[in-house]
Length: 604
Image (tube, rainbow, N blue to C red; front, side, top):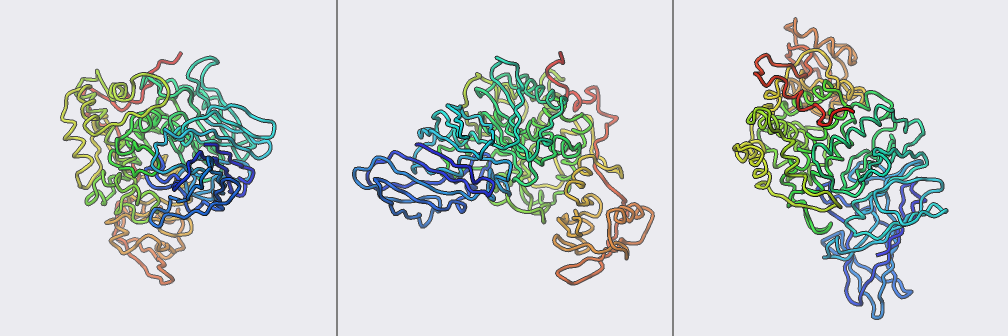
C-alpha cells in the first residue's frame, strides 16, 4: 500500500489522506481499524471519516457500508484493474489515541496512523506492507520511531516500507516549536531520544535535572529487564493545553500529551512525572509480553481485557517505581502518591459487587465514563488496584526469600529474553503463576485469583503493610491530592464528607455510603452554602476542622435542578487526608518499601 497524508490543514483538525491499494477484480471489503492496541477497546474514530472516495481506471467506484459492521466498506473492483485509489479526510477534533480532545492545534499535531488508513478485510496486519509519506505545515519538524527514507525541502517526509502493524505502532508528532534530547551517548545502541513539540518555546525548557533523570530512567529500565525489544526508542512528548491529553504505548515509542507548562510548573511536573516511565515500561509489559486475549491478528478482531491487571496494573507499579528510582519523584512523593491510590480504593464500595477482573473485561464500556458515581460503578481500577497487588507480590517475594529475591527477578524472567527488534510473546494467567513460582515457590494462584476475582470491601493493603508502612489519615494535606485540587480547581473531601466539589460548586462525585451520600447528596447537584454562608474552600475546611469539637451537623445548602434544600450532615471526624506512616512492628525487614525504591544502578 502507498499512503500519503497531507497535514497542512492540521490546525483546523482535518487530515487529508490518499491510499493506493493493490487489488484484484471482484468483490472487495476494506476496513477501518476498529480495535486499537493500548485502548483495549473498539475506539477507532470511524465517525470522523469523511469525504471517502474510491477510484480505479479513471472511474469513481461506488462503495457501500456494511449494514452491521460500521467499519467495513464493500466495493466491486472492475476487470482489468490492479490498483484502487482512495481519498478521504479525517476530522481529528476528538478520538486521537483514545484522548477526549483534538489531535492538533495551531502549533502542534499528533498523527496516529490508524485514523487515516483502510486495509483489506481478513488479513493479518503483519502481512500488509505500507510505504507512508506526510506533508507537514510549513516549517514544522517531527518526531517518530518510523524509519525515515528521505526528508524533502517542501516539508515532506517519506518513510521506509513497514508492515501495517509497525506503521500503526509508530505515531508521529510535529510542531513549529520542536526540541530533540539525546538520552544515550553517540554511537550507543539502541538509541533513546525525547522528541518534544509545544505551543511555545518556553514549554520545551526541560531542566538539566530532568534530562539526567530521563537518562537514569533508560539505565534503570536496562538494569530491571536486562533486555530491550526495540531497535531504538522515541519518547514523543506533546506539550499543549489545547490538544487532547493521553499516554499511549508502542514498541519503539510512546505517545504522550501533557499540559504546556508540565516541565516548568512544579505541581504539574510532579503529577505527571510517572507518565513517561509508565508508557516506556509498556515496551516490555504490554507490547513484547501481551495477554493472549489482546494479541490479535489485526484491528478488527475483538480483544479480551482479562489480565489487564497485569498489562496495566504491573506497568502502573513498575512505572511509578522507575519514576522514583530515576529521580523523577522523591521517595516521599512516591509514598504520597501511593497513599492517595490506597485511600481512593479503600473507599470504593463498588468493590463489594464488581470484582477487579470485571473492570478489565468491561474496559469497552467503562473507559470513557465520567467521574460521577465512580466509587459505586468502579472505573479502570485495574490500573491502581493492580499497582497495590503487584506491590504485595513484590513484598511477598522479598519476605519469602529473606530479601534475596524480588519482583525484579520476575521481570527479568518474564520480560527479558533476547534483545532485538519488536515482537509479541503472548501469555496466560498460568504463565504468570509459573514464572512467579520460578522466582520463589508460593501459592501465587490462590493469592492472585483472590485479589482479582473476590468481591469485598477494603483495598488490598498487604503490600504497604509488608513494606513497613500503614495507611493513616490526618489534617495534613496530601501532596498529590493538594496539587490535583489546584490543577482541577476543585476541593477533595472524599475521606471526610465523601465528595469532590468543583470550583463552581458542582459535586463531581459523591462516594456511595459516605456521610454526604447518607444525607441525600449526589453528583451533579451544586453546593451553595456551608452553615449559612456562601461556600468556599476555606469555609468548608473550617467547618470540617470545627466538627471534631462540635455535636452540631454541618449544614450544606444545595441546589438540585433549580430547587434548593439544606442537607444536615452528622460528621465529627475533622479533616482527613491520606498518608503513609512507618510501622513500629515492621520486623527485621525494616523499610522494605524504601529498598524497593533504591536505584538498581549505582551512580557514577
